[in-house]
Length: 68
Image (cartoon, rainbow, N blue to C red; front, side, top):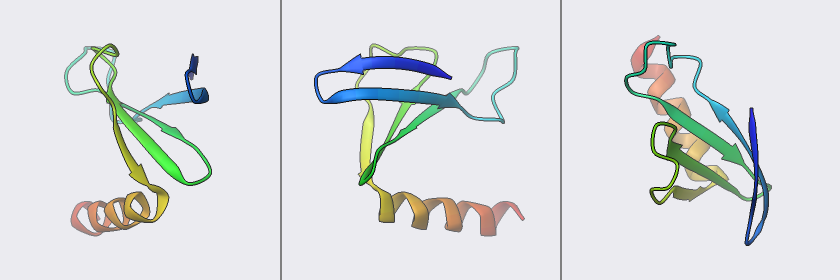
């Protein structure tokens, strides 16, 4: 977990469990009460994607159905 202060508050970033130690495609997620922030963990200075928590839950459910 990586905690950062932002203009809108404190974000605790969690790296995907699918991100390996070798690098590659790495994603970090920070959750807030009504939003979820997603960013590239290899380049944290790039803009993050922010979606509402309902949209994130729908995406995760969709992805889980495709993987499982």
